[in-house]
Image (cartoon, rainbow, N blue to C red):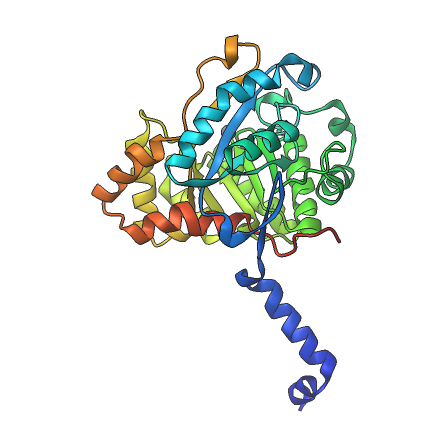
Length: 340
Ligand SMILES: [Zn+2]
């Protein structure tokens, strides 16, 4: 009787419809790129963890005066064109604020290369907090979340360019108080914006600890990308995180590590969790302070070596498409693209 009455009221039906929609992946319609919202269907083949530029000087000294953007474009653009020729349509740029994030540079590179590029909001608490700005030590998780949510709402630093995801970083577990606060702030920002959280994570202990913090904040594992999951060698720990809904980012593909990445991905397929796996190079890196940015690593090993090796190891074309198209789209698409 209760139940029937519930369905008879218009309000009841609206509540049910709303709840269903919020949970449906189909409701996630766009990605937020440095050139604005783009239909998620246009994301195409995506590299989900790469870097254009990184400056390791530290949060207190980081400055855009430390490099010449014209030179950076000269160095980086050929690599982006090369990635385009290999079929890449979207590149997720994971350099956080105070480590060389430069939305205007990324926009320029996106316009000239034709690639969709995503940038981020959030702070990087790994590497012993060297890249955490002074205010973040004093502020609460709510205050930090308010800053990051403002980036999403208004654009980053007056550029009007909005972040397409949240990027944080934590050292190996157990989590420090500061790392815990950053995770909490990311969870609150996710609740306000729908942006996925990509976290540079020291090890499996830290990954599972972050999922616990998210749970306390009412955020499910689907909103969490465990960055550098390849650094944890236990497939059981990978599976535990996948069961909690998390994305496993095996993102250190290089000529030297192809075999290890293939083994990790094949293991996840065997266990039935390929639908939670992301792959990328963590490559690039015009390094500020080195002549012409030092040795820039290209974005091509995934196509030239990883995919052929993965196919030899038993992955089929559908599996590959899932890894480089479907999973990135599901991880980074947002349910609402415009400001509230
Ligand atoms: Zn990285």
